[in-house]
Image 1 (cartoon, rainbow, N blue to C red):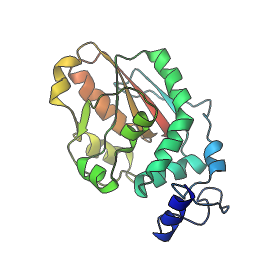
Image 2: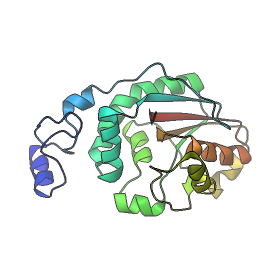
Image 3: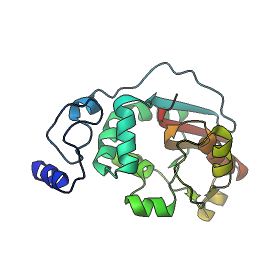
Amino acid sequence: MKLLGKLVDSLFLSEDFCISCGKGFEADAQGFVCPKCIEDLKPFHPFEYIELPFISGYRIFAKYEGALEEVIKSIKFRRALPLVQALAGKVETHLKEYLKDVEPDMITFVPVHFWRRWGRGFDHNEELLRFMNIPFLKVVERHRYSKPLAGYGREERKRITGEAFRVRKSFIDLLEGKRVLVVDDLLTTGSTAQSVAKILMEVGVDEVYFYFVAREL
């Protein structure tokens, strides 16, 4: 692990200090957020939950701030796959408790577009479930590429995400009457989640639930 950390440093793929707390630390497999900041990640309660059309219910792990924000940004924009595994270790119990409450027939995730997956090397939501050993199916695909949604307002997000997703053909006839839980990293305006829930309901899904790693307030 130390050798890997030195290699990451030598390739300028890490920092000499934690990008969350600012303290120096010995680089490991990811080299961005120190073990102490990751260890301190805990569920946040309570949230003020707002109604999201087409969604029967949802749960959020924590606020999109501090170390959690830096972890998610490093995963998405610095391709820090080891941080997905670290995040999975912190989120796993919280998500599995929600799965017991919902008892979904099927678990899936909000996918990234093929080009983003190709550039990053992985789909972070898919890998999050994989690291938690939670059985899932790739029910939805993102067929329209767009720039990252950060910085867009609510209406613009709705326009961009409105036709970005579709149910994969192999699942269209398998979803009638099902209860589906969808995992996504971030709740901002809810436009993405509503778009995904809407297309699932259109092919006969009975109830759609979401689990978000973070909420941007």
